Length: 119
Image (cartoon, rainbow, N blue to C red; front, top):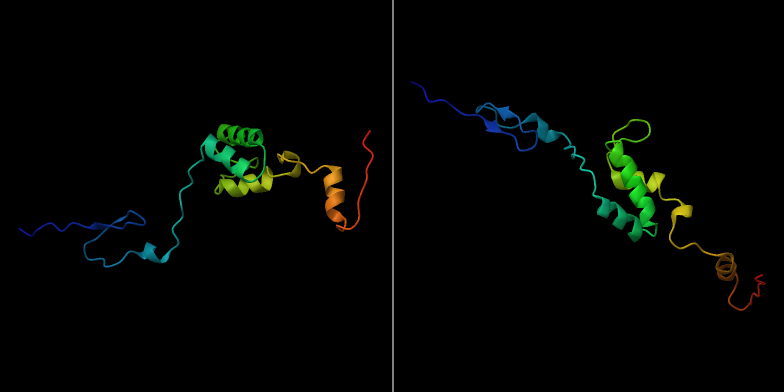
């Protein structure tokens, strides 16, 4: 009786190959990373670290979680940070808004003084 030869499993594509195969064809291909949804705390922390309101991050997370991490066009979200930046990072969602006086004062040369009436 001949011994039974066992194949080997490729660590990248997880296919079982013949014991006579030396390499797997998948090793020349790019490995696609599996998407794992972020936790609510990760999203809130990401928004806070980038200067946006945590409440908006929570709203975004709840919306995508309810939609099984698909966008409004039904496409599966691949990179959640990129989606948050393009859809949710807007000026009206920032935590600190520059008021009119601050914007005027920073645009003027330091030698000039600005007096504004506040009523």
